Image (tube, rainbow, N blue to C red):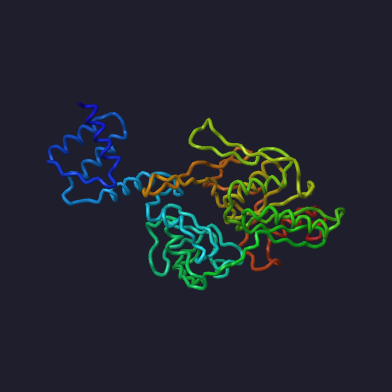
Length: 399
């Protein structure tokens, strides 16, 4: 009898969406809830609380909302990148948004606030003056406190082409909130830009990491090697500053392009015995030429994988300031038909040197601090990288 009673209670708790049960007497609810609390399993406490609230609370309650609140409460104890997607939001995420465009900025939820990782070069966000570490507090005058990242993006940031959106931000060093008006545009982003620096160094600017980045990077290196004779080419600058996002597999392929062998990144999941390793294959697109990687607080995610791998294998000198520290990956896990989903952090990245950089970032080998340069001429980090590649001669000329 007791076994049958336990099964019925569990079934009632697990099938709350759509169940309509008659409210029993208060003493019965209390007795059943108390019995649940006394059971040793942790899940029973949750079931007991659900039963007590659902059947004993003075007002009628929506069972679906109770379950949503319970899930949000559990997810709220996890890292800031994990979230619960209720059914309407999860459904909207699966709809095509081809008629809508965004702002060209990567944001992250951090301690209940939405922090800008970095705007993409030449995007509406960059043109409006949005900066790394800006905190978005309002969109079109509406507070975004309590939003998830998905809600912020889908409900507030994307919209029709040429429509305007007003962001209220908090910026370090500013006493009052700053308001910026942005115009949503369909911007064709070039993943890689390149140029000669002087007649002896190739400059490679990776603006974003996606499926087109590696082919564009390979083409840029070929063009530069054709323009600069091999006996004069002193090396390359790989600029990953304000490169805010990149899938792990794409980042691995970019790091692999500069490495002959060795591990690129490891992904640690919930099971410490199960660690995924991703390694390089023979072949270096620069033929082993010296390499300097530039990073800053807007370097995040996949760009940090690249910088961390090249630094750990001493394939490159990393220069600039500490990177952002977004070193985890999330998986969307559906909860059933019309039941929403979890965006769950399922892995953290570890560099070949054994450093997990989520929340801490990649430290440069050589620190060079500067504000965002307004032109090439006052880009102190780039100048330092060029001097390093050109060696003592360049330093003596500077002195």
